[in-house]
Image (tube, rainbow, N blue to C red; front, side, top):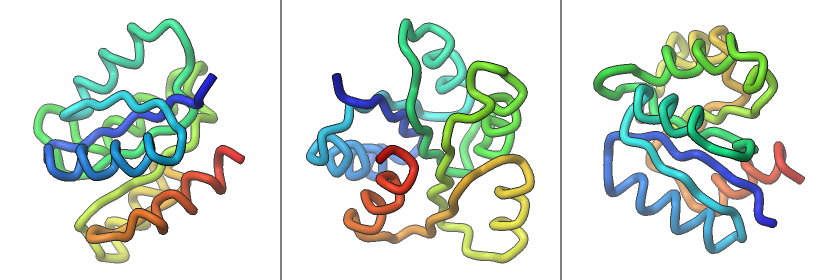
Length: 123
């Protein structure tokens, strides 16, 4: 059974590109358009999500909020989380790590870089 990865981004283009890259590498992908959508989908899943990839700037609940909610839940406290954001500042990176992200990639990015980063946590 393939490992399940959740991709959370309000850009349909980014979701499509990331999902395609992950599926091509053999992963199952679930998508969400913002943090609230992600929490709802994760809580309704019968099996575990192996990794979460999230944007930061999204409506309803941003990436920081999503990470905080996941880290407070015992079930997802250790799930690897990769931030994928166009925010390139040190403040954003530091805050992302402080709330519990494991890694931070800046858009635009190459699919190979994303897959390498995902593989670090899942292989």
